[in-house]
Length: 120
Image (cartoon, rainbow, N blue to C red):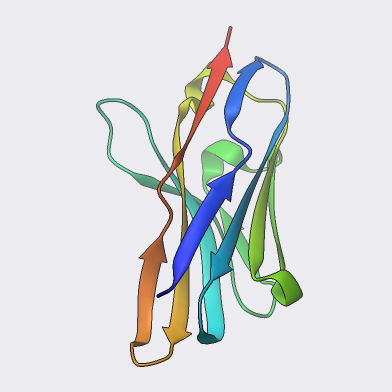
């Protein structure tokens, strides 16, 4: 059973920084794209950043220049470094990954979410 477990959320003041981590566990053949999404109260879930298996990245316009996504393939882990944070970054952040797992083929997996709150 593949699982994604996030950590690193919390409360930070505007202008501050947080680092989120997400680790995949289970019996996997490979992990393709990994990414972070977020959902603020009353809003739809949106893509924040994504990183491909070979390190290519893309970001939402709202976080470009402030957030950095990276991954450690040896640890099956993806990170989101968030700097110059704004109150509008407040949301539940979800990790997602495209994984080929034993007996399951290629499918998307999601973490349970971690709350990020930015105070003004």
